[in-house]
Length: 368
Image 1 (cartoon, rainbow, N blue to C red):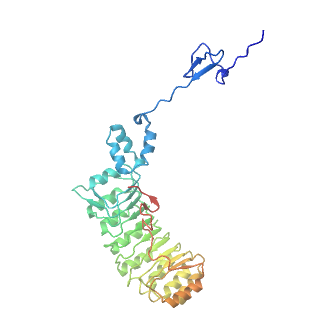
Image 2 (cartoon, rainbow, N blue to C red; image 1 turned 30 degrees about the horizontal axis):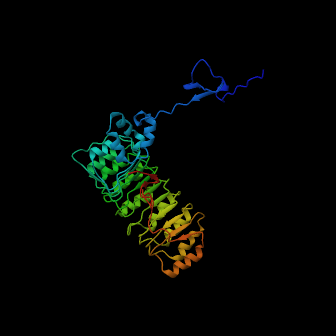
Image 3 (cartoon, helix red, strand yellow; image 1 turned 30 degrees about the vertical axis):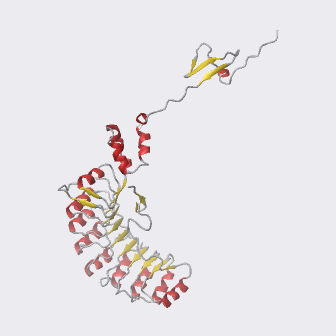
């Protein structure tokens, strides 16, 4: 009698229990054809959004804007707890908005570390106390904020590394709270008013780790400029001291270059009293200098500026309005292709937002 060959599926050959119709959650069905087994695969069960784990929901929320996250958090207590997770609020952009103190305080308590408030209006509303926060990057450029509230805001910050108070009126109390963040390495005070000699003393005495400083067009006195140049932090790498028209002298530049040996970028534009002696000081002491802006320094000559090519790392010179067209062409011929001439009409030293990066501060992207 001829032997009958049984046919099995691949799954059946892997050791199916013929007595048990259910195997690993899959139903085993005998076919009408002799010796052939079939396995029915159940359709996958679809999960509701509320059944997703918190980690998955948190990842989804990270792609949404802040307004949507706030609306999501108003749904239930669980979603509110997820929506308030610090990872969603680390970087916030509140530019051009009107906020009150309570809203600002509530935001900071969510773990925000990077906050952009460009041209933001902060209303006092008789509430001035702000609880301690974790801010490390704060941009208050051109903000409308009361002195009392600004003092409280800076008092709540203990770990600031980068700060911009550009175009804000300052006083001794504000500066005193600001310098409590001794780890500051970037400070933008461009076009600020109210910087007295005592304020300058605080800056240089407390902020010994400053690497990027912008104090352009701050209407400093001769005494203040002299003190800053003589006591500038030794680790300073980029300095913008432009706009000190009749207060910045060759002696100040000499004191500065002898102290700040790590200086790489310097802006001394609109200092009409500077002469070729300042260029000599830079060439002798600032061996790491790569970029110099000396626009509208009318007493500088092309013969002195040409000597900057002797600096090994020097690559950029901006002298808008300083020399005539013929002298500029001579400089261009002397410099060749290694040194760029008049490439940057505006300084970016210590400024939080530069170029087209309108949604970033100091290279960190913020989200509306």
